[in-house]
Length: 386
Image (cartoon, rainbow, N blue to C red):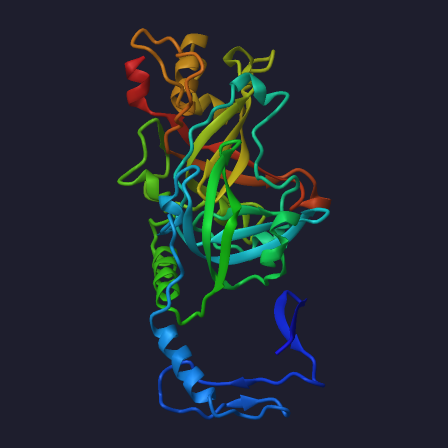
C-alpha cells in the first residue's frame, strides 16, 4: 500500500490513493479472529493473510524497542550527556524561529537541580534567562501546563524533521528512545540524536497509567508542591511568618487565576541584582534588589524592596554580614576563614519564602504583573552564627 504522511490541525494522518490502494484493520490481540473490523472498498483478502496476521500478533506480544545503550528513566533521574529513553507527555509544540521548533515534554517528576556556573557580576550585562526560548510563552498557553513537575524543552531543527516531532499535537503520551540532556544557563535542555526514535503510546499503556497515577497523586497532595530534591525538608537559611501555609510551585503562582495574591514557595536564589551588597540600598537607604528565583517548574524575578528588605536582612547590617547572607542564599562556597572560593560552582539551597503578586498598570494587569518577597527573613540561627 502506498501512503503519504500529512499533518492536519496538529494531528498526523496516513493518506492513501483510492485508485489502487487498499487496507484492512484487524484486532491486535491473539483472539483467533481473522475477520477485519474495517476495510476499504478495494480490499480483497488473500489466502496467506491469516498466516501473516498470526505471525504479526505473535511478534506484537514479545515486541520491545531495542534499548541499545540507553534505558527508560524519569526526568528526576537524568544526568548530563547520558543517553536514555523517556516516557512523557507532549504539553506544547511551537515554532521559536523559522524552521526551528520547541517541544515541551513532561512526566510529572522534577529534574535534578543544576549547579550555577555564571559569575554574579554578569547579571547586569548578561542576566540568567528565565526560559530557553527567547520570548516567554503566552499566559493562555502557560495556563494549560501542570503546576507540578519540570517541563523539559527540546529543540527540533531541520536535521530532526524526519521524526515529524514538530507535527505532533499536544496531549499525546510518547516514548522517545535515545535522547540526552545538557545544561544551558543552569536549565536542562533535551537533545535529539541521529539515533532518536519515537513511539506513540496509548493512554491504556501500563507505563502511561503508572506515570499518570503518580502525577495525579502528587497534584492532590498538599505538600507535594515541594521540589522532590528538597526532601525531607528545606534548608534553614530563611524563615517565614506563615509556617503552616501550604506551598505553591512557581508555575502554580504564574497560572493563578487572580492577578494579585499571596503565595508561599520553596525556591533557590540563583542571582541578585545588583550583585554588590554595597548597592543593595539606594542613596536614601531603601532596599531595592531583584532576585532570580527558580523551582523545578519555572524561573521568575522577585523584588526585595523597602520594609520587606529590612525584615529580610534583619535591619541594616554591615556589608560584611550582608555578604555572608548573600553567599548563603546563593550557595557560594567559602573557606573556613569565610573567604569565597574563586570560580567554584554555586549550589543554592532550597529556601522558603513568601511572595505576593501585584501589577504596575491597570490597563495591562497581566502584562505588568510582578512579584515581591514579603514576611521572609534570613534565619535566626544564621544571624547568631555571624
